[in-house]
Image (cartoon, rainbow, N blue to C red):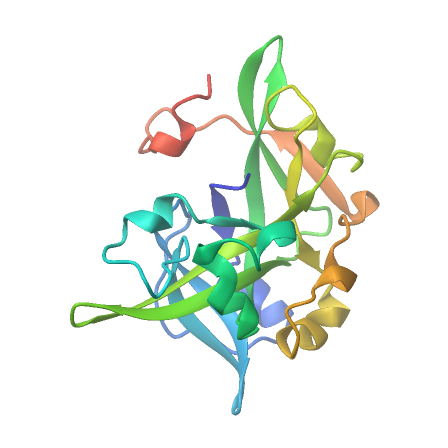
Amino acid sequence: MCANFKPLTVEQCQALNLPPILFEYVDEVYPAYKLPLLFNSEQGLQWREVMFGLVPKWATDLSTAKKTYNARNETLLQRSSFYEAAIKCNFGIIPVTEFYEAKYIDGKPQRWCVRRKDGQAFFIAAIYEICQIDDEIIRSAAMITMDAIDHPMMREFHEPGDVKRSVIVIPHERLQEWLNLKTPDIHSFVEGFPVEEFECEYKPRQMNSKISPQLNFFD
């Protein structure tokens, strides 16, 4: 599961001819952090600042976000956290520079990054929701994931066993198709990213960096 990533940079945003992002965001995102989400509106492509971790309309606080940052595509219409957003086709994009996963070496987890070889940002499929808790409007989103047991790169990550997951990467040329979906059936987008366009690298956390609970299990 993806719990940590770097959003796209200003330079990557410009290179992809995307609208400028008019709010600040952190260099590295964890669950419950804010991030830029791209979606389609009547005015065209727009950015919204959202929380990483979907907060459903029935939530009474923000604690859900630390459990709902990844949404399995197989159960979008079965889990109460994601059902309403899926029915409404609230699909967006979280553009990232790289994301981090655990690779187990000699039984111990190491922090590795996955990124495009050409340095471009890439689009991770997301589902989003807008709700109100007390007097506050909450915008939030989750990354959509898929089974990766047969993916040449992603099957090497996560704990040893037969459960392997990967984020769903939307090809650049299918961006508008994804953002204009009018059905919760996303089957045609559920495919592993082309491994020849990506690379992975061991990337230990910096000793002077803030340690997140999501990284505590890494060496």
